Length: 447
Image (cartoon, rainbow, N blue to C red; front, side, top):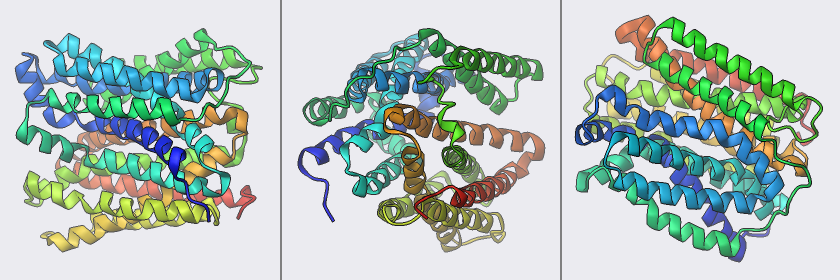
């Protein structure tokens, strides 16, 4: 079997550096919010925008950047996003007020979105077809571990430095990734169709309203406001679909969703990342309720990302030979069993009781990602790689955002039992995802 090395290996390093920074900064600011609020003389509620604006910018622009990648070239969009992200990270580190920091985080989210939107399409250009699963395995490893260890990385930085260094640390890595990207990323060429700014505006409105809806639902705002945000999202989606009617290269890739394999793979992705969002917000509260300290919680969370790190590359290699439907279904069944094992923990569990259950979740989660990513990309034609890549990132972020919002709903419904209810909801999402994955056997020609 051929190995990816030399120029292609350096190109992959550039892409993975960008993906790692973008993924880490999705959650890394959460840990420092109290310190930021105090130093910037703002309220805790106001500081939440430091997190929300980043997610809003990403989800609102992922699909437009994916469409732009098909037109202008994935390499150009990725490098442009890397430049914006790096400069915005420096601006975040130098911010002297909340409005300045929020504006810089918005720009940072735009840069992160450009990188994430085309990263999977670039991997399709970097790797030969018989090694593509390995590339997706590496991507799955980086994304899952970065999301999981974000709070731990933030704590380590804050232990020796102030919060601006959470953002300043991106600058040298960004400069290094830019140098590699300019030298090594392959040129995917340009498309012949035109970019549709009005469709991009409708898309931004639709996904922006959804992010606000999820965030406000998590903070228990008035139902009237939630209804207005839902209505705005529905109207914008309707306008977007009407605008795209009859287009060969729609920005929201409805053409790709006509493929049952693509649709089921996207649904599987949303369900699985909803499980991740539900678990990684519920578990710290759950561990606290059984008497574990925050330091203990950090260590107890570690087996999940550790086992993802072990399993993702293995699953990537297996997906080059075996059906993604079967591999994804097995992974999600294991994930569902692991979360259910956490639900039925004894009243006073030992560290080992918790660790093997968290490890089991990591095995299942790591076993799912690369095969599912390959299924999404393989079910799209080459000239729609950008649209498929955008859906890979969009489904991941939508699932995570929905999971976080659902935890808040569980607290509203069950009070102190919210964390346990959140884990039970996660079991349901994992089961639905496993079913959707196995349904793909009907349409998977490689089974």
